[in-house]
Image 1 (cartoon, rainbow, N blue to C red):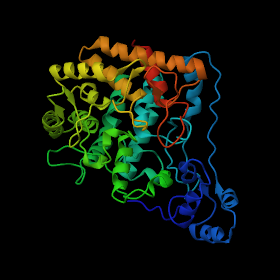
Image 2 (image 1 turned 60 degrees about the vertical axis):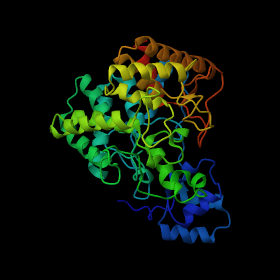
Image 3 (image 1 turned 90 degrees about the vertical axis):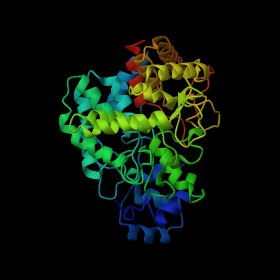
Length: 444
């Protein structure tokens, strides 16, 4: 589908030498560099160089993150000032740049995330529903990516093309339509995206889909972190990245083998939207809902789980409520389980496990908070929904008052710690935190 061999910062001798020499603290920095000559010439220059740091400085344009120094007294003021810094023209600087150009301005999360990310985009857009033209730009960009590559990649980088992310395109279209936009012309692209997630190799015998990635190699953007892992782990590592939950005890080290409740609920929503153009999709949606209820519902515990897993409770259990797939009894039992096990002083925990991974306790994340709030509210569990929303907003406010910025993730256990875990430092900005904050402020 794509060839990375022409990118010395993504594959080959130069790539491996620079990454293993730890020229940059963050492995992602080098894959975002832009080479100044061809691969063959770059290899010659490398072999003639006796200083890898100087070699990189001379032969690559190194990305510099935009400073997000914003002076503000409140989160709302901060977000209003930071939106123009996060909304960017994302244009490749040449045929050796790993960045994929987008036709319209896009919103980046912030910090090291200097390109657009798929599922981030929907939650970020919740914060600027008064700018419908910005949302249409996002949709046009996604339609372009689907038409060009057959799916929306994890992010608009060449090294992300082998995987997608949680498919929220149908929800972005739904949001746009709720604001008065017309979405019919984009259903063609949505149909192509559905084909991507239901292609052979991504669906089990029950008709349920799983996360995957076609490249079973160390991730280019995390080469140092992956290179010493067993070969059979690469597919599961990359599949976990497609989920957006990278990483979590949820995956049990075998993400590509599990049947994720969130992915299949999102495909159900997609199929219901596609039923506008062909009734076969409504039949697909009903079959998927039936399979979810048979294989992804834990009757004894009273919550939804990932298929083929140990059945642990995670915040993903709320996705059937978010898309309206659960029945009233299931919703009530999920609400009970969430209140008992995941509700936290600062909002809602991602899982019940403390592993040091960023998608585990004690961390909470804006998109999961919005899914919980919206799903619980949809089924009439307004008190719990409001409690999760209010606690999350208070958490955001308290940290803002301390550090003067919005960040990527938050500790929800009531302590004053900054969130940690993952392969990089805590990022500021931050797209989906901003979007969910503003959306919740209108609600609770």
